[in-house]
Amino acid sequence: MRVGIPRETAPGETRVAAVPDVARKLSSTDIESVVEAGAGRASHHPDEAYSEAGITVASDPGQVWGADVVAKVRAPSREEIGRVGDGGC
Image (cartoon, rainbow, N blue to C red; front, side):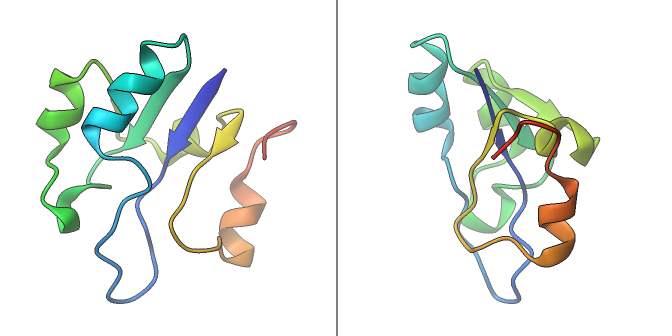
């Protein structure tokens, strides 16, 4: 299973759906995680922290939105819902 962690788009939102330590724990259970580049920046989690945790950092948002499960803090916008891949949730 692959979990996508996109950048939050709501104005003023500084949280991210999974910090590097949580994403690492998911990966240790055979759940692959991919985070959108810059997703953790507002919450002081740079891309490098995700990379060091063994998480894929994707510059192409399609890699994140094409995951089996997309994790967000806020509800996705209509536009974001349209990005979810076939079979994803």
